Length: 477
RNA sequence: CGGGGUGUGGUGCAGAGGUAGCACGCUUGGUUCGGGACCAAGAGGUCGCUGGUUCAAAUCCAGUCACUCCGACCA
Image (tube, rainbow, N blue to C red; front, side, top):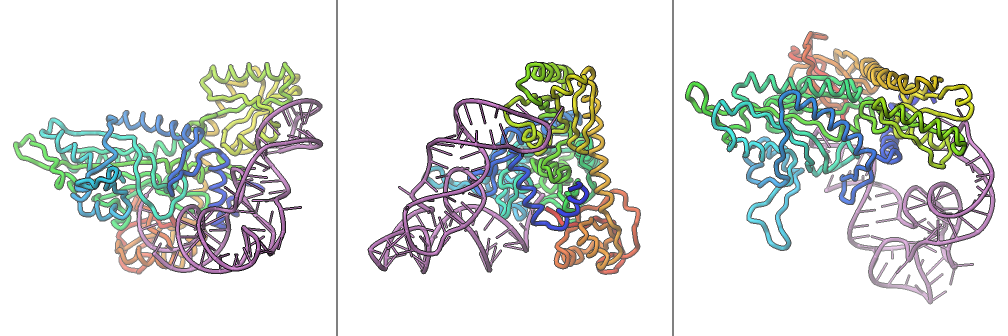
């Protein structure tokens, strides 16, 4: 089946797509299911992908002036209760520790669903003067949210993430930080994950509990559903006031700090699968692939074959390519399928015939194309090819995204767009009632409002009233 | 929390009162190797749990637990 047909097919049958997704992650040895509902064991291959994501993103976060730190897993319940909207938003899904052994605790502890509260508590102790600002902190940690329905990587009870928390002296500076980190996520998604995203501001209904404004990057999955892949929040003084984060400014007055927070999670691995995968399984962009090139020997028992393969492996490694030689005694056909399923970007086949001709067969996971490459220049060619694949994968995903956005002027058009697995882009009056109606009629939600607000119509597509915003709509994970 | 569904070797399933089976995987030996190889010989299960009916229960009945899908909630 050609890939385009496959995409069409999986887009038509959602439940099959879910099954496909589960198959990919299990057969690609990304996870085992955990013993607690909604938890997962990330297997070494899956974790290696996370490590590349972590490493690349951590460099970008540090390059923007942030430092890593670590805060406790357990948060006294009273901390969580200090910000009204925050506690209301998270209360239903926090796990609470109430006993140690048989002894009840004086105060219940919650397992962090996010760390704003405990970090703000610490910030209030650290900050006294404008000279202490800005505080730019990042944490790599696990968090727990007891979700009712879960799906590996996309929504698990426990997940790994990065959460940034900053304090600034002015609103302007904090807002600038919020947008800056959103841009970091956008660039990271594009350059490392080959994943195009819609960037913009969330509606008040969809914003983070406790934030003034929430911004997001939204990626489109192959089944036409949206995935919120990262968020950046401007918190204003919503936390600074209850947690008493105050500083003495130049003018001698006590002032509350302005804050931002932002995060991305292991959900990105799920996004990778659903953005780049096909019917053969996972397809990884070279920059986050644990194995970038795998060498499969044909008739491996022949000494000249193994020798040539080993030489090729060394030359690849010498150029910094993450390469593997698989000379296990499984059949070549089995290995082809196995590494395609795991998303290895490039496969190199070397057999007796090739050695005679001085070439190797090179297979691209993204296009499924097979070409001959001279053995002499193999490593250099593979290095170039990996760069090409990285760019091509982004372009392919971007074409898919762009061709699945439809501008709509009314509910009928929106319904058609959503049913066709498209994102709908429309004008909107800004009323919550219109969002609720879309949810009720189409099971879709507002995604975000792009920064470019050039009108694409004049009336709200839902109610027909005067439009205030341009906004994306879609079904979401 | 509402509505379905499923629990039997490692995995996927069949068995619908009478000796627990099949496929894949796993182990050993051999032949293979250019798209999930083949032959031969093996290992592996008190049928989710508890109680009941029966000469006899994986099978029928009652309860219970777990998992799962579809809704509401969420990164």
